[in-house]
Image (cartoon, rainbow, N blue to C red; front, side, top):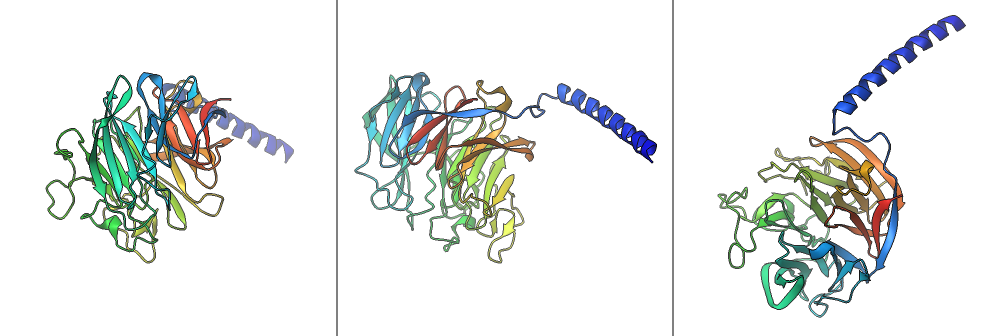
Length: 380
């Protein structure tokens, strides 16, 4: 009996060694293979702000940070400077309102802010920039959207690799999408928009937007079926888009679309919450399910979308999507290949009430705690 066990064990060990050898050979030949060792990171506190909520890479290697009450400050090697923009008299922090997003165009020639005004309307404004400084007298309003409630405003803004401005709006608020905005193509609510802010007055519609020739749909829409796409990003390496869409009561989701996408994705809300029918909903025939979802049985309650790490400081983290949850605060990772999650991870650090991530000009990441702390994600 013992001899048989040893013989069988030897055979198993030999087989495992062969399999491992083949796996290593394959991995060494495949540049996309996951790193053998998990990334080891630390959070370095680089500044304290007043409710930091969003940020963007700025000119000259700076990082511009937005504070929810309406101020924008510049983070450089000396720390966080005095406000370079203050719209605090034009916004309110009631509900989920405030200054919600900021972005530069690719040449740092124009700066954009996304906020809710005193009436609760979502506003995207533009400023010209010269020598790295905002020119206040050039301010103009690009786009507005009435918000029926004080929550689910979305408000994140990013320039895509195509040079167009993308704007994320939630479904308008309350709970359960009472107006059916997520699936309604005749409203900008519950959508990811794509516009050309410099191509017309106040903006132009890119000719290849997916609903340009649909008389029943708004031309600005790029994708739809979103509940509250609080934070989204583009992979600086591939151009893929990733959206952290906050769930209703049971499921948090991350949506993904490849850079080659022609738009028009329907992410399902409010017929679906993640991959699950919502309150008896019927899954749309064109539903694009999330690339990842997680339930609320743990500490999580509100996904905070992040970025695919493309920096150099943490080689083992490169190519992985880093995100968190507002209630949990743990930095988590996804390895995504060809639209499929091939690995999940936990970086073992907690950023507090993580409300946003910021990607610096060299690809390094910052995690913003709404309580005030701005952390840089560094190698441990």
